[in-house]
Length: 60
Image 1 (cartoon, rainbow, N blue to C red):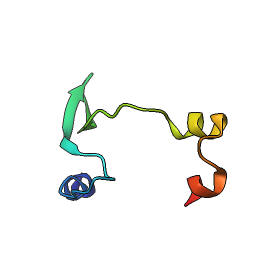
Image 2 (image 1 turned 120 degrees about the vertical axis):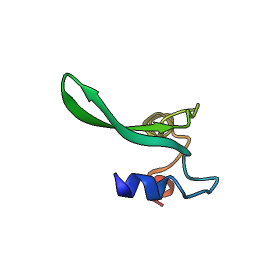
Image 3 (image 1 turned 90 degrees about the vertical axis):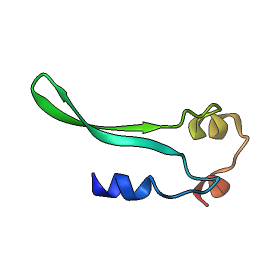
């Protein structure tokens, strides 16, 4: 939980924004949650499959 809270303080254009972190009780059990910004676009797997990004660039 602490790691998520500290990560939420990072601000950079290449890091997803973390809006909230906490625990919710579901069926009597505490379940951790993260609320992150919603990003639109293609997944890396799609870009690799289409050949838009080569494996070397993806690894970098």
